[in-house]
Image 1 (cartoon, rainbow, N blue to C red):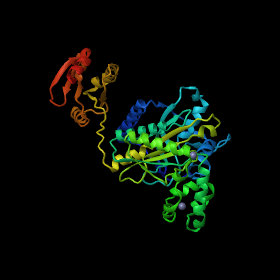
Image 2 (tube, helix red, strand yellow):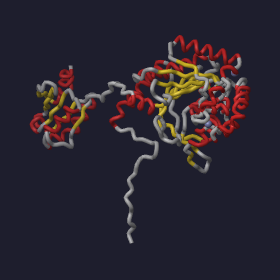
Image 3 (tube, rainbow, N blue to C red):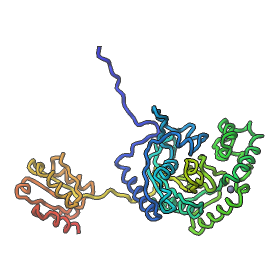
Image 4 (cartoon, rainbow, N blue to C red):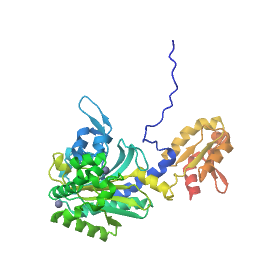
Length: 425
Ligand SMILES: [Zn+2]
Ligand SMILES: [Zn+2]
């Protein structure tokens, strides 16, 4: 008996989206602006693999973080677990060590852009496959000037997309020296309140108490109002670092606000943490911080570093929500219009000649009617149409039509490039 197969209609997976051709113009623009901003501030491009050893993230992002605990897409293999990267920083640190980038002139400034994966509940600003652009600076000193440079690169990139009313929320979460005592203060404050905490926070109180400050649960949120403030507990070194950073940020005239509850959910952060918001939108456009011990944790020398990542899908969403007009238009092309079989037959070779002469054309070789082709040329906003018919194919010439005025001129094929360039002027 033949098996009766049920028709399956495939759809992309939850939280994973196609980026269709109509949207690619905007994505191209974002990537181009990213290249320009990164280029200006001398960040060099790095691309890392999508799959990494899962232990890389367990060791760096942190075993007790939501990202590693709940959100990683893990691929089993006989050589151990691999993970689809949930973020870029651990991979950058791994690459820095693997390729001996510490031997380059310091600081090493890198940027990347590409998809990341987290098994989250999809909602506004949260996808399971999302795209991030990141800036990272690794150096031999923890100079706050680098924190400021990462911030300014992020802000200038977002501004280049005409997104306004930005605000950087900044906090310091201290260092190895001062954080343990703050941690203790925090635990002492929350312990008597355990009954009011959500399950996650009850657990975090043991594993990662700083995270209680950014719990979104309705019961937990009001409690943080009276919680001890990190800035009151940081050591002299961290305090000086933070003050100097704020001076730089003020000199740069970057809009910022202190946020005592900002901790960010990753284990490797020290001192500076920040997130960037735009008015009227709940989710952060991006964020980052300093990670002075990450490279050491992965087996390298002490290499203080700072970085940030921006959510490109979030920027696209903000552009849509705020109705930002970026005036991005697809490149206009010259229309190649053919009539009749002989012309069609000679067209492919002729188009190759145009390509070699760097004349950008769009053809309609699957269409027959002259009118249909001209109307498509009009719709695409082509400034010129090249009309190649039976007569032209025989006589080795072509008609150049100005689509605005309708004026036409016949030129020999040999002089087609000159003819086009003259008309375009
Ligand atoms: Zn400190
Ligand atoms: Zn909670």
